[in-house]
Length: 339
Image (cartoon, rainbow, N blue to C red; front, side, top):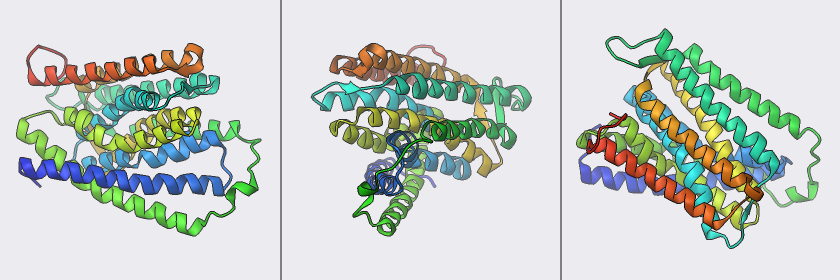
């Protein structure tokens, strides 16, 4: 469906608000259900909260794959969201809190490094698509098939297994579950999920229509506009956790959300569509930026195992430079690697 530019702008704003509301319902219900079922904090942050806050990205990939018939918009949203998550979310959390955000060796040496492995595996999956299923008449373009999509999904299965093993000795506190109505929370969770799905459906259409109007590549529209809109729930979760002096949970949500997005959201879109094209020449520069952003965050977290306000502002500046680079290259002002 093609929208006029004013209508598309209104839809983007309204659906972003709806995603915020739906994600708030979903995440608060997920947190209470995690407490009710006695899950440890690292599982709450790295898996439950991360999966809950990643629902907009997952829905964006699914709708882009099924409705638009392409991975470009969805993958752009995932990679752009991942860059937004590692640069903007920790930075905002660090700026709005008075104290430094505490990290941990487990977060730095397990979560961050496994996330880097997720980036590598997805990039390898795309490379295999170009090598074994090249797109006819196109350079550095290929088709991601269902068998290839299983590769990142298998790695996420390993991630969940490792998390389960690391928390095997966890003993929940029965008193913490008192007063939580599980049935009501499940209802809130489903209501939040339904709101997100409806909102993202119209958001994807509005972003795609806007990109067509201005002649901007779908991957880039996904990396900037769609990524920012779908990353707002992650921002909300991490900022709340940081303000509650739960720095590890705040940062674990960022890395866990990105791991889920890369290893689950994109493969699910492929599994539903059967096979989808990917432009390797566009994806690789963005993955390079994502890798550099992750290294910057990793370095900031490792110094004294905390994130200071000065480091938070450095992360924000890095994101501003990234957006400026994308806009300049997309506009054709200077020659670059992006189309």
